Image (cartoon, rainbow, N blue to C red; front, side, top):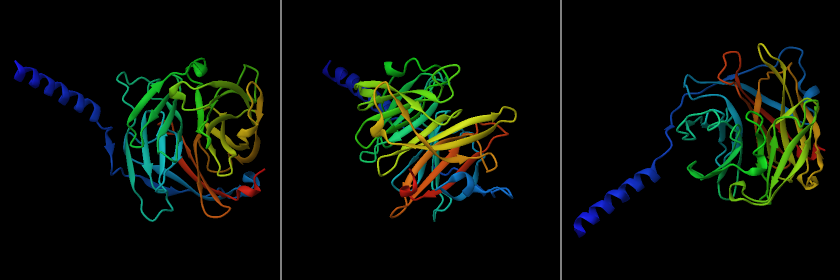
Length: 328
């Protein structure tokens, strides 16, 4: 009897170990090509980009079916970049100016129904101290907390953002250096609104139920936030986008800056435009932004576009550089 009980317990333990140790499928040798893109003759990046310098533009391409549709971008400690897609996949890659080019891709989320709401990652942020990552999902308006190896810690649907709609949810999210989280909604605050968006501050990890409160994000007219990152001096850089022509889709963008110290409950937080991603430049549906220190008084800013797996759209990667002292 004791032997039978021990065998049953052993099988149960093995089953639990197998379930808990299942790893996310990965493609460690994904083939990706960088194709340099030239600025059109007559276009002047300096006229549009202000203090930012355009150091390079590339189109990224791969035959893999899981490549593309990137909606968020994170810098990693080894100089690689982690792109998260709205199809529930990821791409970790060395940028084109790196000595070695390595690419790893895989399925990020295991939603059994494989529904759009269960895998629509639109925003991401990372704690540089622990390496843990948080994802914002549109549709379900949920936040996912991941370990550094991308394994799940927990997933919740905070009541504070539950009313953000099925396709207008947490498009931009960042963890501030003080541990607070800022989330920006993609949609405008009303039918006739052109500047204001609902936004939320969580006074800690959104997946653990901290105190939270709303404020109003006030940005450039006609543009919606798509990603956000904190600069070393504490200010926030916000990537924004606007559809300017539906078929085939054409986009324009903006980069704005604001100080999170000015955010107040229920009040408007007005940010300032610092660069225009004009349609005369190599532009697509830019949705991911990452900031990387590049020496004294210099930052590298990477932005990546979401191609929506559409033939007429591209995955474009920009490299910008800026002296943060030149930003207002």
